[in-house]
Length: 428
Image (cartoon, rainbow, N blue to C red; front, top):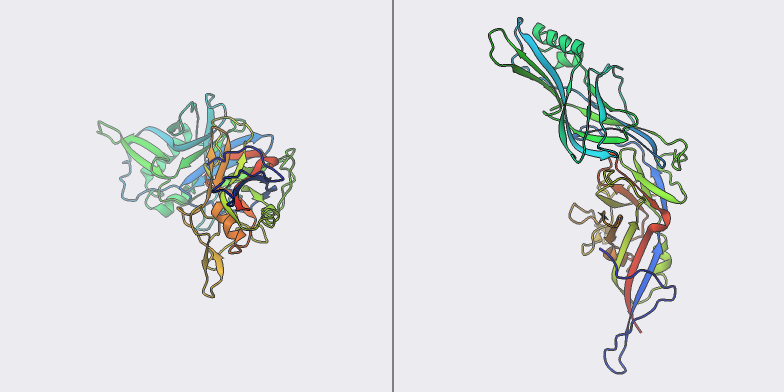
């Protein structure tokens, strides 16, 4: 949503509309002001069982080097027939169900490797800073040229020695008798990208991301297959961030706002977000008496240029910040955020006091990205009106990308390009 003006006026200009001779005129006022922006490094967040693994190696001048490794258990069904003792191995492949690609130079080959974990994935929660040890040499690897493909099923060869070993275990039967015995032998996988490829992928966890063994028993005319999949398996993604030598190198303490100059940024997976200081609303609203807000927009951008194949968050939620720079929660523990224009911003508690509404997917005000002009924007008229009328206490905002735990998407913007644009009317 765009406003139909470019600049603001310190002494608001008015456009008079004569209703009748000698009658009042309505003044239409245009104003624009900036919201100070900072960056915050979030405390760790849960990446367990997100249905996707983040796998990537990225590097840029603002965020430094970011490495994401996907970890998953594997699943077998004890009801699936195993090869007979005289069976012959045909081939073993590993397939990755790639559901999203985010990077640069996608016409060049990108390399991925699958490693056997050397420690188990436990029945606990894993966070974005977690990692597990794995064998240094992959049992399967390969290159992919994505081009314009944003999703694909990639199939890699498996190392001969590993293929022979796992097929031998299948014929012996012992470790494949049940899931627990199998996971004692094979704790799981780590999926990695190659440093320098500057690309990340989201890998779907399920039946398609799997180790597939093809064999034939004596007398068979066609191959049989045995699938060892990531379906019904515990998984998580671990992300490392080396920001040394970059503008974000000083961002070290968790939940602490940092003033960077001249730009701020947001990086999914890493947990770097943007905080907006909304105190300029106080100075603005204190000058107004008896006005009607026609339209108020928050606009962020134009964003700094990056490759068209490097993703920005599709939308951004404006959560309220508490004094510790964490998301403000309701009395029931729900996250509180700015509500969409035209929706209620406040409700009444049991004592009759105004309290922020707990939104849902329909009512939350999301900053929407416009790729044509590289800006985010959203109407916040109803929200500001609730503050102006004393129903809602102003809070600073924490900007979260919609895909914070599922990709390495990012954005960088000049601090001077975070603006509130207002049209309001008053009688005189």
